[in-house]
Every structure is written in C-alpha cells, then in structure tokens.
Amino acid sequence: VQLQASGGGLVQAGGSLRLSCAASGRTFTSYRKAWFRQAPGKEREFVAAISWGGANIYYADSVKGRFTISTDNAENTVYLQLNSLKPDDTAVYYCAAPRYSGSVYNTSPQDYFYWGQGTLVTVSS
Image 1: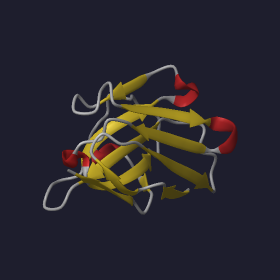
Image 2 (image 1 turned 90 degrees about the horizontal axis):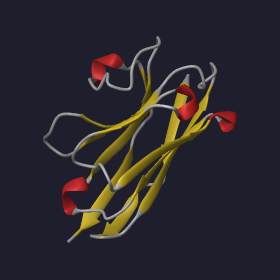
Image 3 (image 1 turned 120 degrees about the vertical axis):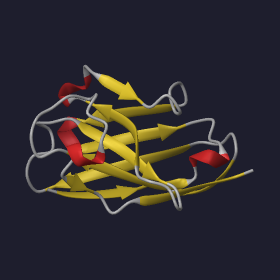
Image 4 (image 1 turned 90 degrees about the vertical axis):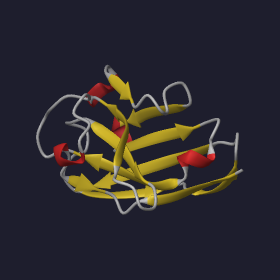
C-alpha cells in the first residue's frame, strides 16, 4: 500500500483546510484508516480514525468538534476536514493504515503499518 497525503497549507487561525489521502496498491478499503500529526519537537500524536464502512469514528479530545474524518471507499481515499483551526494545530499531518484489522481506539502509531509522506499544516495567529 502506498499512501499519498495532500491538502496542507498556510491558514489563519479560525480558518479551514481539507486534507486528502489517496491509497494505491493493496485495497485500502478493508481496514480502518487514521490521521496523526507531529508538531516540531513533539511526538507523533493520534488525531482521528474511521472504521471500514465508516460506522465507527474516534477523535482525539483536542480536535473533537472541529475536525471531521471521512472516507470514500470506492475511491480509496480518506479525508480530514479541519475547521476552526488554532496555532496549536500546526504540524505535519500523516495518514495511516494498519496491516491487520483492529479498532478505531487503537491510537498508538505502533498500531499502524502504512504511512503517507505527510502534509504540512501551518496555522498563523
């Protein structure tokens, strides 16, 4: 599986962005997908995850109510809508997929095997 993330950029606080992650290779549809982020000097942290089919979704508390994860299984793409952005949201955002099935509550980066290259989101104050 190869994951290609896009959609990052520079935005003012309060603004919005939509990130996309397109998959190629092995079917992307069978397992959950997730977004993580990593700010400079910080560890990679979980942002959101969505199960296959979209029935189960889980968000980190820091983004709940502001970010929305969705997927279009037919296109092997997962999205992350970022609204009401804050300077603390500045980070490189990564999409990820596991090698085996699991739960959206598996929030450790070690629970994921396939990673996109990351897309930079910068929020100015």
